[in-house]
Image (tube, rainbow, N blue to C red; front, side):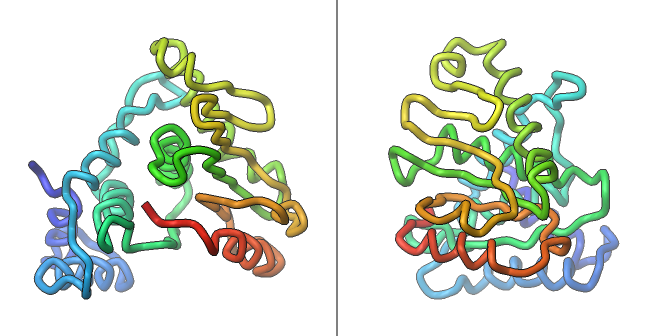
Amino acid sequence: MTDYVTKYAKKVVSGEILASLKNIQVCKRHLSFMENPPNGCHWDNHLSNKAIKFVEMLPDPKTNQPMPLMEFQKFIVGSLYGWRRGQYRMFTKAYISMARKQGKSLIVSGMSVNELLFGQYPKFNRQIYVASSTYKQAQTIFKMASQQVNLMRSKSKFIREKTDVRKTDIEDVLSSSVFAPLSNNPDAVDGKDPTVAILDELASMPDDEMYSRFKTGMTLQKNL
């Protein structure tokens, strides 16, 4: 079974793939962890590849065809799902920064749909939210996820019966789980119990209040 994450990391560290200093450091960290994992942690290549293949399977809203991920995109997705602390994910947060038109929204929406449809914890009432400096911007990732789910619904009876795509949210009706965009209003987070929280275009947000509210709301969540 191909280890896409380690393969990419080796190419970056060797100089075969040119990358920024921070990206090189992240790849070196991965290779170092592979040799000497942090206490209680391990690498699960099966879970890494499973997440990568799911995101690649999702149809591109522009073409209605699966869109293979580039190597650096596989590294991002695979790293988040492959590193484990016992039965839980080792990484609880990620800062993803890339140039425009490099597929950030694609992989973020893909991981969001994965968590909505196939998240393991909690079994019911998973809550996935995306927020940004404006509600319109928050809808960017949400609309992409909606299009992806609608395209899957057109091909799969199972997905049609499992999901309900509405203007303001997507529901996994079998688990009463929801994915929805939020406005940049910290009070909108109160009372919510987010499983996954996405802050799109974080640098454009006026302060870190939304981040703080999301983090507080996730206190009791497990990171499966």
